[in-house]
Length: 459
Image 1: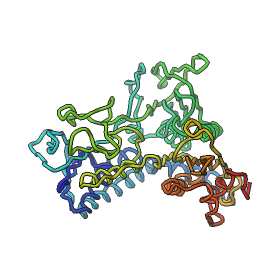
Image 2: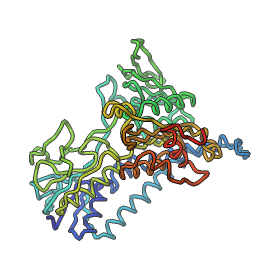
Image 3: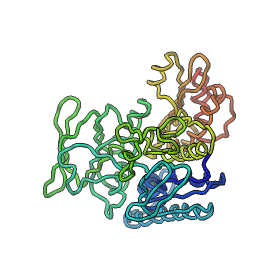
Image 4: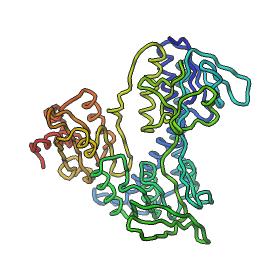
């Protein structure tokens, strides 16, 4: 049982682990080489959502006449948008620093390097921090791909996209996952021309195929070009900007001209300078291998968050941080990855938890599916946000919910009910018989549950 814990990395996983350890009376040292909050607060979740908020508000104002409101001389001040984004980031990073002080957590700025299973050093210094347990929470960095021309000026990562001082007139985005799609709508809604190139058969490859197709159709109707089953072969340059060459599924060759090229092909675990080989930590390619208790193969050493691979989500890292600390203090807590929600902050939003329809059929065979469209939701009609559906997948034998997938307004908020239901092993009947307030968007979840057996009221 640990009386002291050293945490390497101050992102969502690391700082939450530090707070939980302090709550449990443990002496905690947190090492962070950059700013507290990690990628999420500084170069990921928070700044991208701040930009999306500005883009969405601009879009709403442009269509304000729908609500009987006339708005004239609408303009975008991109520098002001960036200024607000930076202010939001600073406020939340300062908030994390306050929480460290409040919980009497020692914070060291520097790059932590493992010396042994109970000692962490700081690169470039003489500091040595000894503790009973170590939690590695070093996060991830943008992935790259072996494409000719990828190192040329004008080809950027998500980190660089968030640091842009000017809005590009056009952008080609290589990768149709969460990062790529969110940036696509930011640039498009602010007036830029956007092309998405995805090598897999669908955008959002890990999500339910029906939901992904609906979002792709919506993006195309907005004016965003989307190519799936497409392979980028070369990125070139001329006096006008960048040239992106790619091959489509049918073998035809395409080329587009663009100002910027965003590489959004995911992220990879960050173990640079950590000293994993020195300790003999087990790895699978670039990720640290842990068991269901977040333990590595080295006693007293735990790993959480993006550095362990899998779903790279801030809320997953936070939960793993709490779990790892409790286990370091003698508990035997397991992570429940079955109920980790996945969220995409496009417009409409996308959120899912549990199995997709394809995976549910493969694993369970006989399933039931219920759907409810937001076109039949009174609240969605009021908000003029009727695109999308709620989709519930249930085991045919017992009615247990296997997955819930939402595309529509505030999907990332609505998914919480689905997560709780699955956590409690609820059946679709449990949700169908739960009274939901009217008029609300959450009624769509209830109606989808009713639809599993064809009992929908409002559709």
